[in-house]
Amino acid sequence: MRIVNLAVSLCLFSASMGMAQTPCGGSFGEFIGDMKSEARAKGHSAATVDRFFASAQQDPKVIRADRAQGIFQMPFIDFSRRLISQNRVQAGQRNAQKWDAVFDRIERDYGVSRGVLLAFWAFETDYGAVQGDFNTVNALVTLAHDCRRPELFRPQVFAALELFERGDIDPARTTGAWAGEIGMVQMLPEDILTNGVDGDGDGHVSLKTSPPDALMSGGKMLQSLGWRKGEPWLQEVVMPSDFDWSLTGLTTMRSVSDWSRLGVRPRTGEFQGAGLQASILLPQGRNGPAFLAYPNFNVFFEWNQSFVYVTTAAYFATRLEGAQVYDAGNPTPALGEAQMKALQQKLANRGHDVGGVDGILGSKTRDAVQKEQKRLGLPADAWPTAELLNRL
View 1: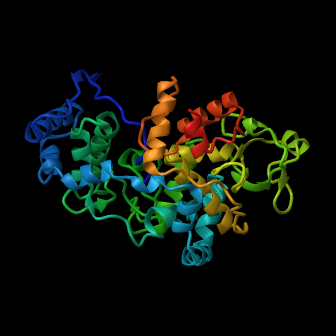
View 2: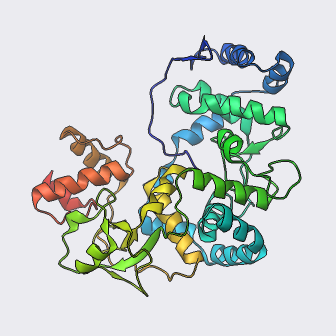
């Protein structure tokens, strides 16, 4: 699920390796022919290129999956309760014990806490049980041909070709997610090339069948994305009722000591990141759960762009390391899809960048909501309400 909610991009035409990139759209057969020519120009042998593309087909199911991501329209409480079951918590605890030595290596070499990787392992593939049945090469060439995000997927096709040359992909048989991610923690081919680790020492990076390979590769990738060793990422807090809600949100960072002086308190224990900068995160406004988001929290967005997914994954990682179930509070009811789209359109009409009128409460929509709440004299907690919609 790493790239499922990236912003829609325009089709790009630029030069690479001395020749024009293959344009998106048009005849699929001609597109594959052009991709093969480009691959040969990059130095791959004609025989290897022919074998790699021999079974490549357009997959309409991939396009349908790309256009249907309604799950990310759910608010945090509903989404997290859907993804976090007692079975997943218990399975995470069992896997933490089973692969304890691997997690020790990851924490030593890459500084990534085991709860984080367990959370991704759980959400991406249910600890390896459900890795996706889409043909990986077909998914990648389909999305590279589609003109919604070709600049994202074209490089992944050539990365998959390189993995094929290494013996780590079978174009006819390798399967994974609809967006081309492979293995237990769902990594794209370029990520595997850059961060793949042979954790079990068998000479191959086998993310589909080897937990040590998958987990260590995920740890190395998170380190490469900026993970800071030994630091927390998310901690539940209790907010004072008279707080200035305009200070909340990921764009405002202050020291933990500053938040403490303003009356913010850990729900249990002590602050985990004393001396660090942090933001106040209110996934469902001032009446819902509240968290302190440390710098490592932002690394989750490098794995997946969905606000609700990232917040849920980060919270689940804390649960797997002993945190209690969050206090859901009593948040104002969420807007329905039609209401959310209407709100986004009104915000866009006022000049705000909401990232698209899609009914999804992402970071850009939250920022716009908070600005309008402040302008209208409403509690500026970035949680859209029917009152705000009516006032606009």
